[in-house]
Image 1 (cartoon, helix red, strand yellow):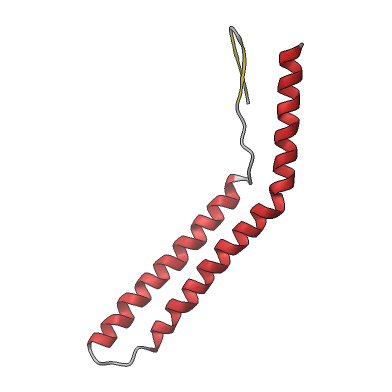
Image 2 (tube, rainbow, N blue to C red):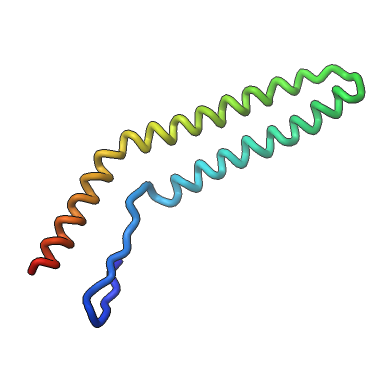
Amino acid sequence: ETHESGQGALIRGLFGPRPSVWLMFVFMYSIIGVICLFVAITGFSQVSLGIPAPVLWVLPVGAGLAIFLYLSAKTGERLGKDEMQQLKRFLDEVVTAREAA
């Protein structure tokens, strides 16, 4: 995005995935968190009443899913790192060439 001003132009941009990708990760973390919250409330209520609570096994599964999401996000970040650096170098070259002209 470019904004013209009296002294030149202001360039604004975002190097990263589409906002829908970030929203997907936020949504998935939220779903896992809400499910784990309800499972914890139900399970620990059962434990306090002396009732067996096998539902609590969902908590480590939820933690595992959250860790998997985190690692997949980091993997995607690592896979896109070279492309992001290439885009930044290109932008720096264009801006530097424009300033020199």
